[in-house]
Image (cartoon, rainbow, N blue to C red; front, side, top):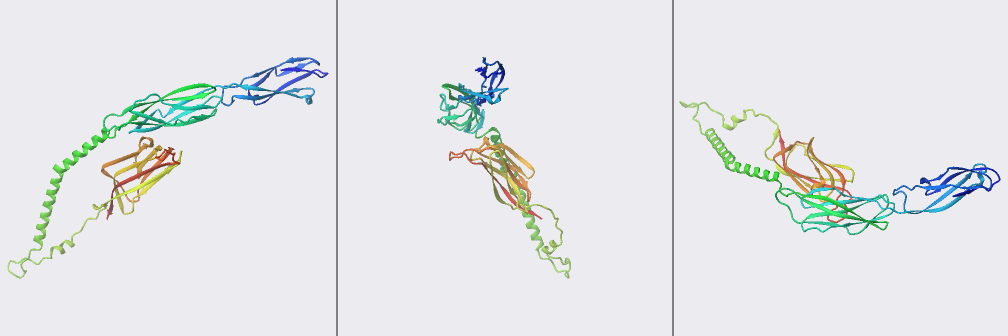
Length: 397
C-alpha cells in the first residue's frame, strides 16, 4: 500500500486493520514518517490460520491510515481477500468392538476440520454372506468445525448355539467430498458373536441334572420312607391313646387318666420366628425410564409380614439402549451390566435369595444413549424392565 503526504508539514502515520481479516493481518512497518510531498510503501501481511474458523471465500479487508498531527485527515482504503479452501476430515468407528448374540449397532463419527463444507457418504466393500452391514445411503453435509454421526448395523446370518465366541470383521469406507477433492477413510471394527448356550450355562444345566437325578434316586426315597415311618408311629400313638381302660375300682384296674387330647393341652410349645412353609408363587415388575446422561431408579418393596424367596429375574432392553443397569437386593448389589450387551437377559438361583419384609429390590439405570426400537425412530429416553419372581411366604410368629 502506497502512503503519500499531501500536507505541508512532516507527518507520522499509524495503521489499523479492520474487517474480517483483522485478527490475522498486520502492517509493516507499523509507523511511517513522511516529509511534505513524499510517499512510501508499506506491506500488508496476511497470515490466515489453517483452521475451520476462517471460512473459505471472499473476506473484506480495510486499512485505516491515522495521521498523528492532523487526526481529522484519517483515510480508509478497502479491498477483498479470497481465502482458498482446504479439506481436512477425521473419521472413526464407535465403538471398535461389540459383543452380541447376532446383531449390533455402530456409528461413524466424522469431524470436519477444514474450512469448507464436506459431504460424507458411507461405502461398503465386498462382503460374504456370513455378515451383512446395513448403512444409510443418503449423503450428510458437515459444516466446518462441526461433526456428524452416521449409524450402521451389522448382523450375522446364523445364530451361534454352542462353542467359543466368533469374531467377525466390520469394514467400511467413509467417503468425504470437499473443495473438489475426494478423501476415503477406511474404518475397521469387530463384532464378537456370543454363543446362545455358553460353557457356564451348560455346566450349570449339567449340575442341575445331576442334582435332580440324585434327588430322584437317593433323597426322595429316603424322605418318603421317613414320612411313612413317622405316619405309622403317630397312628400307633393315637390308637393307644383311645384304647378303653379298666375302671379304677376294679381289682387290677389302673387309675383314671385324662384323654390323650386333654393331656396334650398341658404341654408347652416353643415359640420361634421364621418363614412358614406354605408360601405362594409371586412376581413383581419394575419399569425404569431415564433421559440421556441421567440416572433413574425403580423399586419393588416386599409387603409387611412377608418374606420374598427370589429364584429368577428377567431383564428386558427392547430398545437397545446404551448405559449401565445396577440391580440390588436390599443393601446387596446383585449385578452391574452394560445395557448394550443384551436385549433380553435372565438369571436363576437354585438356592433362593431371601428378601425380608419392607426391604426393596432396586433397579438403577445410568442412561448414556437411548436406543432405536422396532419403529426405526430413536427413543426419547432409556427404558428397562425388570421382572423378579419367586415364592412370597408369610413370617410365622
